[in-house]
View 1 (cartoon, rainbow, N blue to C red):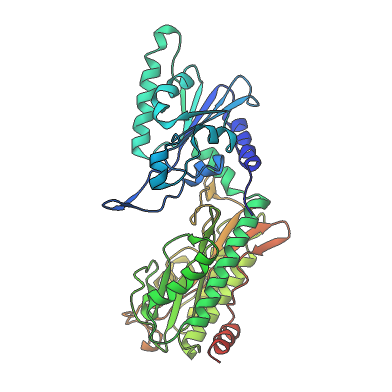
View 2: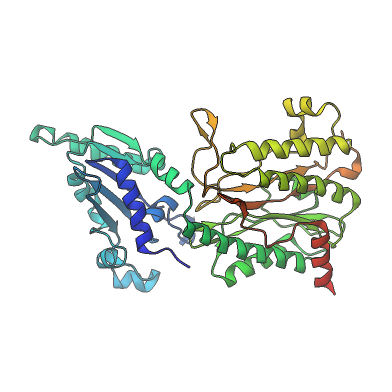
Length: 441
């Protein structure tokens, strides 16, 4: 399943409506990023640029101009020209004709002509929208173009009187997912769930963390996908490092392994974390902590409901985690006081989720007018409570130390209640142990 040019056109229509008359929006894609000498990272278009254009090549700028009415706008695409010699080395390009025929631009220009052509488009516009502060080099270009337009004032022309943040419009558009976007995210989630299932089936004591990561990448690659972020495969105490990505230690029997990994499908991300025993069997201490995290996650997922405040799943999770820590003797005191003083942060130091979409930490504000905003139909959020007992935490019994657990799923707020996109990978203790036992038999 892929989005069509009609989907991208509808987004540009919506943007033009919000820009107002006599306005211009300028948005560039990502620059090519170099890994080291003569080698660059595989190019991935900027999410907001792709959201509006569907154009995945580097060195491109999109321009949307409204006239006296917002219904009458022009979409221009500046991109690389066709070049046979360069295409032999680096692959085919859409070129100017392709920008019009395949990507439905009203006008298309060679990217080399941007400085020359943009000035005429800026003149006599009331408002300029661009991604202020997104990239210093582009900020400098915008400033240069405005100065050049201002120099035209004596001839009755001039630059826009207002310069506004384009992200304020596009980020809010991206926050509410369409049915087509949710379908793409469901596909990404299904592939990622299959990868986690394979990891549970393939893990063995003494296996290297990077070898287990390779099992995930195998599934991603079989579906033409890449990881949507650097995969975390943390065995034992490495699971207590929230952003552990070295993945270069052996996995020991008796330890848990925490995997936070997922893929991106057609520019839409998934994000899953599962924690399971390397040898296929939870110890009593691992099981006790895991059950607390799982209970917190179930309750937090249930709180992802239209009208609830964004923060409510976190507050629900914190209460259950804190009570569980009290029950195990890891925290002592009154529940409400421990929550008020954030004593739980010794073992749970991060939030319970984030927006998810084209970016794994997706765009969109979390507050409106200083208050946590309410969930709306089509918002997608991760729900990922955890507990991490540091290996050097001498305030707790040694039997708990070095255990790190996180459970994460992707959830859509819908009129029918929370929709869990990542439900295809098991997380109940009995189901995990059964799956792993079957793989060994």
